[in-house]
Structure formats: structure tokens, C-alpha cells
Image (cartoon, rainbow, N blue to C red; front, side, top):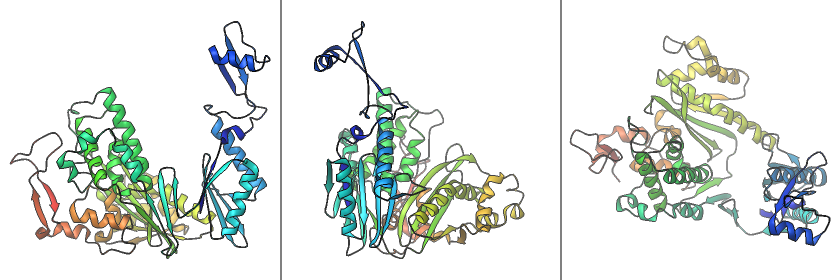
Length: 470
């Protein structure tokens, strides 16, 4: 694999005749341009207007113009074919195997089993764009992710420790609190709890900082640290008008990240025979009684894609909540199947569901509706059509093995750490899971005296937080 940075990329893209990009200059810069070339005129208002013949950094259209140029170079000049379901992925079949180019503006990631074919692509890019920087070796810094390839183990690790520590900068005083340094989960049991009076609002400056930090952590959660995805998912619902409780939840999350910044996601290349989706829904988790949807994709033996989101409708039963969770994930499920097909993998898609009533609704639609489910919108039975057409299948999964539970409720203790190891593929093998059965065994539970609702001390009558013994 190689990563390539195209120097001055936007300046290499020509502006089409039917588009006008105008640059306005004034003051010393306008005078300097006029001295450089007297054809550049300054008007009576001291302004200079120039028409660009090539894209320029700062223009909204610049990135699009370079993408069009790169697309033409890859497809017309180099023989690549764009993936129909991701406009930034290009493939080229050769006698020595597939070559794939992944583009993010002017940063390219090129991979192939054939070193010779890979070098050919790099030579072609150098011929077209002249100035390019090529990064070699087993580790690459790509978009804030440190990707390390291990050919012997056939795996890739994605580490974002540097990016995470940069996010924590500026919060050192608050996250250095002894209680935050000792937390081993990103959120307490009270993650979804909010005050009815909306609590004490943050200042405008703190609100901006809260919003930007949550956005950065969402980037981390979706790429290398799915163990914080549930917490970040909730915090994204609070960015418009956060209060002090939300701030404390963010500080707890940063405290957890500070202690686990070196954790990484491992992607494996073994047993890629099907795409297995674990989907779960948590009934009435939020204060407005809406549920939480969670989903995780296993590609072969490896967890590669994760979802966690607050449901947009209220449901009347856990069965309906599970059905809404499946519907929430369906667009991503279909996209994944088609994306992999365009990459050359025709894989069976399987949904794992732990609610038998939901499975009956998915397979039979309205025929399996009872008094509590007759009101369901027809869109939630779209999955029935997909099953009948053979696009996907659904299998029952016992609740103890429902990994997606990790993305619907804030788990604690050993249970959290065990599922985290599975999801991050830390042990590179299947780990025996004890899921809900762990919580059902009272011998494994103890009462935490420091449990508290954010901002309120614990009283004898107040709720206590259950923690699994280490």
C-alpha cells in the first residue's frame, strides 16, 4: 500500500468555459498585481477583479473541479472504473490482481497485491501531476488515522491516539480530576438522563467548544474507536443547547479516552464469506421515551462498520423498537452489499435479530401484526420485500450473543470491556461473551457508592449504579 499527496492539487484543475471564478483584490495586493502586469486594472473604487483559468484554494468550486480532473485522469487515462456506490473509490483489474485507489480530496490511498501494478499507478500519477509525495512502509498517516499493515497476520490496525490527545488538549485541568482518570467506561448508567428543567445552560463560548469537540469525537468514533460511539451519538443530540450535565458527560468521555488513547481498531482479512449484521433496539431509552438503535457489521471474522442513533419515532413495544432499528440500518445494509459487489465480492447479507416477534414481522409483514403492531407504518415492512427477493436473510440470535447491545445502552464493568475487545478485534479471535447473563447473576454485582446523577449527590433514597466486579 502507498499513500500519495498531490502537491498544489487545486491549481492543476482547469476551470471550464461555462464557469466563472472571480477573485476580488484590493489594497496593497491589488497594487502589487498591477505592477506585476499592467493588464490587471484597478477600478475607481480601488478594487481589482480577476477571472481564474485554474481552480484556486478558497473557492467553493475548487474541490469539485479537482475531483473532476482526478476522475478524468483515473478513468480516461489510467483505465480505472469508479465504484458505483462510492464516488471516491476506483478499481482497476489487471493480470496480477486488483488495484484500488481511495481518494479524499488530494490525499490518495493506493492498494494492490501486486507491487509492480501499484508502482505503475504511482508513475502514471507522477506523469500527470508532476509533483506528488509518496509515503511507503507498513505504517501510513492518512486523514488522522495511523494505519499499520501486518502482512504476516493479514490485518490492518487503525490508531488515532495522536488525534485523540489533540482533542483533549485544553481540557487537561478538568480531565485530570482523579475520578475521571479512574473511569473505565465512556459513560455512566445515566447517559440518557436529562433534567426536566433543562438544567444550567452553557455559555456561548462553551457551547461552541462543546459542539466542535463532539464533532471531532464523532470522527474518531466512526473510524477507529466504536467503543465511544454510543456516548458520542447521545452528545450529538445535545449540541444545540447543552447544559452543565452534558458538559460533565463530555468530560467523563474525555477522561476515558485519556486513559485508553492507545487502543486501536484491528481489521482482519479472514473468512470473508458473508456480511453479518447484528441489530438491536433499546425500548424507551431517552427521556422523551424514544428508543436507541444500534447495529454492527461483521465482514467475515471482523467488525468493520458500526451504527448508533436515537430513533426518530416513539414506539409502543420492544418489538416495534427492534423493527424500527432494522429499518434505520437498512439503507446502510443495502449500500454495503452493493459496494462490496462493485469491489468484486458477491456476499450473502444476514441480519441477526434477538426478538422472535420482530423476526415474524420482518418475514410476514402485516400477517404477523397483533393489536400492538397494527398501527405500524408500511415503510417498516420494506425489509419483508428484501427478504422475499433474496437480497438478505434474517436469523435468530440469542440475546446473550447480541453484540449490537453495546450500541444501545451504556454497559459497565467487565461486560463493557469484553464486548469492547470483540468490537475492536483486540484479541484477533472470537472472545467468549457473557452479555446480559452477567448482569442477571447477582453474585457478579456490587453497589458503587460514588454513583451519582450528573450534578446531584447520591442520597439514601436516590438511585445507585450497578457495576460489575473486576
